[in-house]
Length: 388
Image 1 (tube, rainbow, N blue to C red):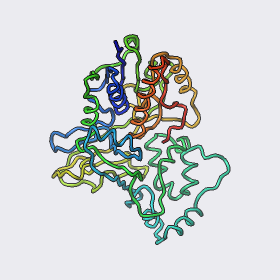
Image 2 (cartoon, one colour; image 1 turned 90 degrees about the horizontal axis):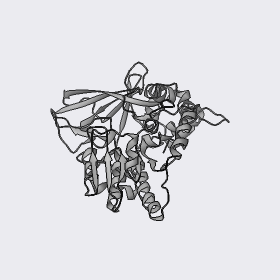
Image 3 (cartoon, helix red, strand yellow; image 1 turned 180 degrees about the vertical axis):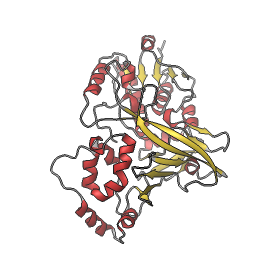
Image 4 (tube, rainbow, N blue to C red; image 1 turned 90 degrees about the vertical axis):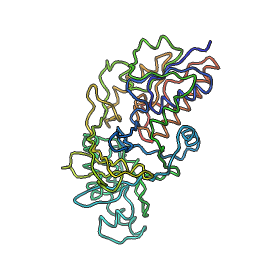
């Protein structure tokens, strides 16, 4: 008899893993403490307007990974969607990421690509020491004017920290383009599931060898009843945070309904320090193939996660990894538990990376099982770089 495995968490990582294992003949139980699948990617139809609401903030699927793209298309119909972000700074609106239009508009110039490169090079800070913080990396790439306007205050609001203490890896996710390409992502594949992420994840879990329960909390005693447990929750929570809680940021949303079109774009950032929210998302713009007379927009506020809050992304201080190292060492000592996903590996993960890693975990687990070996504890070490 094949013993069942337990997957804790019905988000993208957990659902992908469960599906891959089930298709290989491995029975899987999935539990999630929330009342819905898809984790923070959860989407739902607003009962008043019919608009598909990204309940926990915008999620845009983008990738160059053809294997991941083929996998997700099995569970949803996708529509092409190229994300374009605007930002309000000092009373004016600009396009992000910084591109040639942004540079010319900001500096009141008419530069071509080479002239813009030279101008920016002359504004950059020069240093010999490694740029380990967000601020030092941004100053070396952008110089003080662009950094101050577009990123200093926005980053402070988003992370609740001086950008001097935010890891430099966070800035590496933000490109600077010397052309007029204003797409937020440059990946070949950029799309949205037509009926939302929750429908897609539910389709992943729709398999005879998958049983899942919602509103169900994981208890450590559950481990004994399974051949193996795959845990996608927060690594410190697995141990009851008994050495202290790892720092996470959480988000709070103010949802508003209105008539017509509120801001004319999907996302508007707010880079000024005196605006308390980081951005406003207008949800109907994430589904331009639909038509709605009304609208829903959401103001997004970031703060440190307190007990009971939903952890959205790890806050990795530049100077302190000791607590994380303690939990990693304890996790590696476990015999029948593996950690994966954004919270389990304490890393910021794009959706395609989470899916790719979950597929890899399934393959490696099945191979290890066939050889009678212990599966890997982590998809990638939490002590590795948090950036993609």
